[in-house]
Image 1 (cartoon, rainbow, N blue to C red):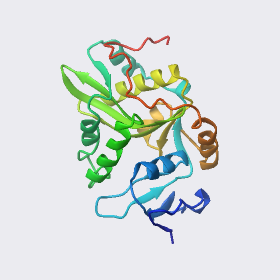
Image 2 (image 1 turned 135 degrees about the vertical axis):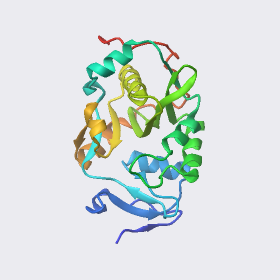
Image 3 (image 1 turned 30 degrees about the vertical axis):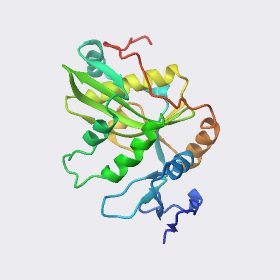
Image 4 (image 1 turned 90 degrees about the vertical axis):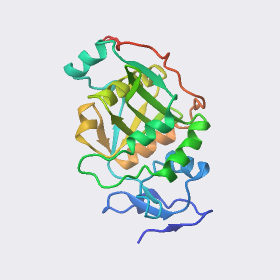
Length: 237
């Protein structure tokens, strides 16, 4: 039985999370800015369908990417060299979230519903949530969004309308975060797609220790700007 949060109640200890379903920690509460920031600082995130109560998760193990471990395949490297795309940041945050919410093959419904979009847009307005966007021929072709606290980026979702457009955005994100000396990108749970990019699993305990160590660092609470550059990632960067 998981605890039901009230407006003022704190999250239970992470060790109380269920093993099945993996990481389910609590239900209820709200999606206020203070609640969300408390959750992310402790390695907890909301994930629930629109017709469900708010569900809070902290899976074990945790899928993460250390920026220095990014893997760029030969095919992706060729795409990054083509110079036929533009990377922009924080220009169409809500549209990126809506695109991530679009129906996908073999998936029923979406957890990125209006309640979630409204909540994360408030974080975006505070300069804490960000979108990284791949534009091709003047159209939003792919991208991702997430939350940055201290030296940790919590990735939430990505989408592609053109082949590999989200991977292009992700590659630029990782390069920029590396330059800003970020130490960790949270990918939440394991997928083959994330593993192909170099993400790997670590224990929940190790993940939480990294958060405690690096979230107290100064947070860039502002809109991001990668320079709005057109072109490829320097393969030697």
